[in-house]
Length: 166
Image (tube, rainbow, N blue to C red):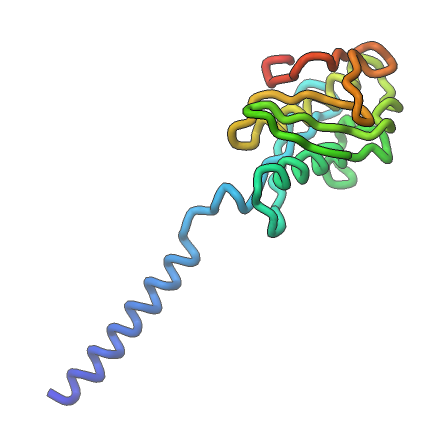
């Protein structure tokens, strides 16, 4: 009888350790652990997702700011993609219901390549932002101002943009 008790305790310990291991290694990844960022291939129409890990901030505004920053920065070096001009950065992000307002620095005005490049760059930003929970459209500001188009006049920014804009 005394031999059975230690065996039962060891078996219970093994079961508890196995259950703990399974819980921590097989739980579904929280939606807050990672986000999907998109970039537009050089063809101008193909969106390619890549997964980016989040830091400790999980509130919607911080996640949206981080997502916008990643989309503006573009994919890893060496990836053929349409990119925002160097120095372009996100100044602010505001969430209003299902629309996110992204304020981008004036360097975006240096976007070259006409309507093709403008559409492709903003497509990646819009697809990234609308991949976030509860976001369906994006409004754009440049240095805090709502503008009808970029200086090239090729791409309209005066209305909210959604995935269906392309």
